Image (cartoon, rainbow, N blue to C red):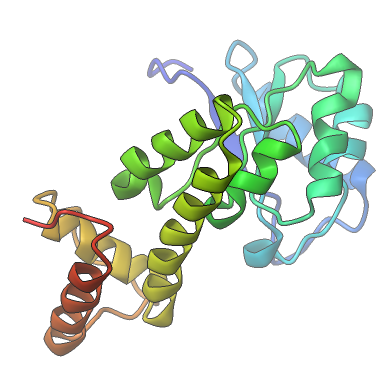
Length: 206
């Protein structure tokens, strides 16, 4: 807050994990209260944290405890739960969707915002997808989602984060190497990755 941040976000502790929604609220309340003038977002990403507590229930129980609660980044494939989150307190909370490969489905469930790693280089494709849904051209939207997923699946076939960093480098933006314990790609893997992406025709690499 002192440094001029626009907002803060936190995942739940994943070593000693909160056992219930009330405990999760306690934890987030402590974090959010340290910067009470900034919007606070809970970051739900069960694949990484192993925590599978209801975000909608978190909203309900946290609304009076965390005055600066603004919403949650929902990186979770449970679209029924996602829709519940969007309806809590008449849509009071912002719930950007965080699984790029499910974006089309999330839009059908009511998503109006998304945050994801692949958007660093697939934003034009996903902008087309969003525009297609806006004109009810779901056939085109499905084709675009399929093309994006083909790329995401290929990136995941290697170390996903290392692959995304290499793609950024191929596009002329060097964002450094993956930190340990993440595995870096070999030069041969990078060469193969470029060849596979070129064959897909999804990105224009430099």
